[in-house]
Length: 527
Image 1: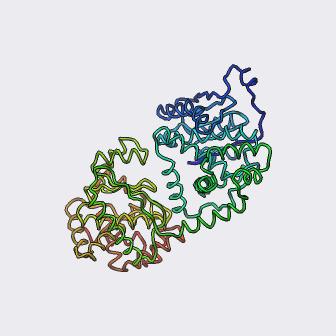
Image 2: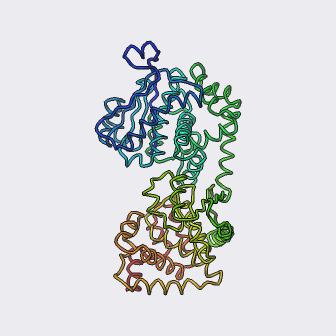
Image 3: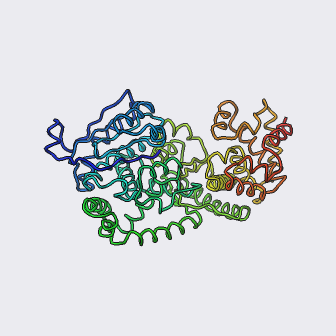
């Protein structure tokens, strides 16, 4: 979820005033409303204790005012804090509570964090959100209360706060700045209707809320813009440049402060960035290979070669290519899989162990490959194509559910692997389809495909039925579509579903049959 800053004009805090209420200047005080999740509260307190010294050492600045951080127990108490302490209006209260995980008011010296663990599931999210909100306080102090809304630049305000969040998370051992940047690029390139650069300049509170509620990925674009700025115009000292900009903002307009700090006019920078981003969005996918210590290097080389062949297959049949930058992390064992997922994906050990037996796993821009399970060339061919095709389809649809066609997304991805096996002399799709039908008839009937339209529905079915048989059903159905309409039909559906946003409607238009009727046909063919 996003975060929204409320940094309007302020009564400026000075040391004398801070001490009058018995509190220390620059100290961060954490309190709660209700009983937040224990892990969330612990992580918020850890960042609160860490942040002042981190700012002093990394940014060479100190907080001048005491800051209150209030952590809510759940969505209801979060709404209560927004209403009572942030003065959020009843008209926007529900939306702000739904689309934000935290908010900050520089004039009040106050940050509010949604302590519901469903809002902040990972420790790196909790670290980065808390640090993000606290850095809004620093922006406010450095600029003497002029860092918010129309006074500032939305993308740099939010992007620099997210950058600090990533720095703090990295310093606390939860993720890296590189991963933060790659994931922001990943989210943007998978977004259907992302915000434009022009929308992220000087903005009103209403405009910011609209960006959040329309899921325009305004924070992801802000992050990529800020990272690009700091890499190209940070002069090797990005933190000092951020501080300098906000100090100048205290006495100058945003454009003047920007030009004097970074040595380029804002309009010129925006034009340069837009050209670079257009190029980034058009180049074929780049894969950075990371080989963990005990992974078989020969197996890795084989897989990377097959990945290139799978890329060629996808381009021949779809006419398109996967875009973006990815990390391919090759692990050597189940335990190494767990360690890599925790290191790169910032997930809990329990969650990592629950997927440690997988052949591959995805964490936004990072892909984990279980090297022993792809050491065999046949598996290498299948997995490389299934993984690449799935990523391509999700990117095209801008939806993990395949526009409510999750079964087809899974099935077509796997069948692309089978198609590559066929081209490599390892059987054909028809033979595999007969095998799947035999396996599916060996036990109780599976649910019909129209009951498997979402990822959640697939997960729930996976708890009731054997996972491999569930995949066999999706594969069988996708293979039947390929048999009837060819791969061109699959990719025509993909194109229509992207344009309409309605996978079921696109299915009817391309294949001339409703999903429900096709599901009934498949069920009769099987049982």
